[in-house]
Amino acid sequence: MVLIANAFDVAGVSVLGVLSGALGLYTLFRGLGLEEAVDDAAEEARQLLYAGRVTLITYVVAIALVAIGGWQGYQAVTADASTPLSLPTQAAVFVHAAVSWVAAAGVTSSLGQVTDEYLDGAFRWRYLNAPFYVLAISVVLHAVSGFFLPGEGAMAMTDLAVALTAGTLLGC
Image (cartoon, rainbow, N blue to C red):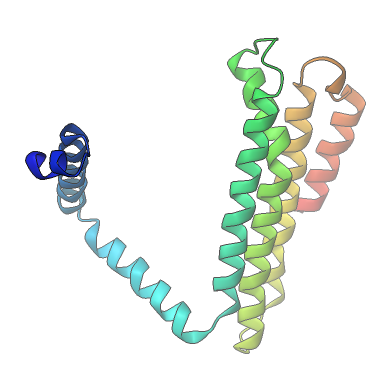
């Protein structure tokens, strides 16, 4: 394998590392009995594709929103390289910048599930709890991370108290 990789100008060590990693993951999956869970997930994905469910589209949108949120958080952490931030402060900056995108992803995916249940005729009003829980959690995370932001961007104590109360009430 290494000789073939070298013939195509690919580092043989890289190929050997990828093959070793793949073999290790395969052994881990077999040893932990995870192959059934992977097979079930693949079957569920196949069923979603054939059923034409709204959930599939909203999951794709949610994944994109989470990726955008992660990128926004990363950009916020690395925006001012002149002032080094401690790890807890970096975490607060990351969460504060990303939480709204992740919340939008959670609401999008849960509304997709609600829509599918409605179209199947199995809608229950309690299914609408999930988007409110996602919003409540995001309000709390946004407020707490905003409180720990450095400098002028930090949230005041009274604003934190109001946001925590609002998040609690939203989750009830």
